[in-house]
Length: 119
Image 1: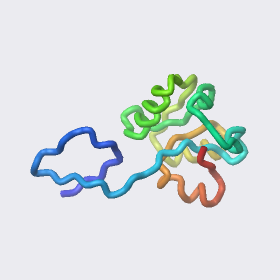
Image 2 (image 1 turned 30 degrees about the vertical axis):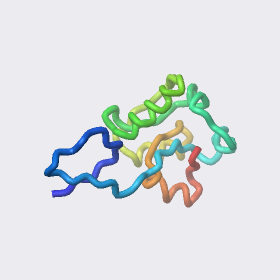
Image 3 (image 1 turned 135 degrees about the vertical axis):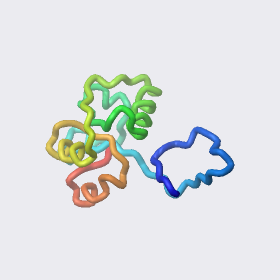
Image 4 (image 1 turned 60 degrees about the vertical axis):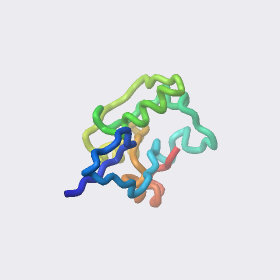
């Protein structure tokens, strides 16, 4: 059997289980190209304080990574929407609904085609 997981390992696996890191994936905050933050050379966690953030379900690992990183900077998000679909988040961000948080692999095509930008 084999399993793939997008997570930061925080446990010692049992001796009968082999755990290997296959790749590292960047987690991105994405925006439409015409968003005011898209042209900024430097963005900090506090810049997201009053943005509508489009996030995955509460149990999603990379949502927790993002929320932990924001909280570590003393930032509490004012407004979030939860989606069960990565594609829904991408489409809503492209439509200007808010900013999204997704792994780079999930938005690589849209970034290449300049339909989204990484902040």
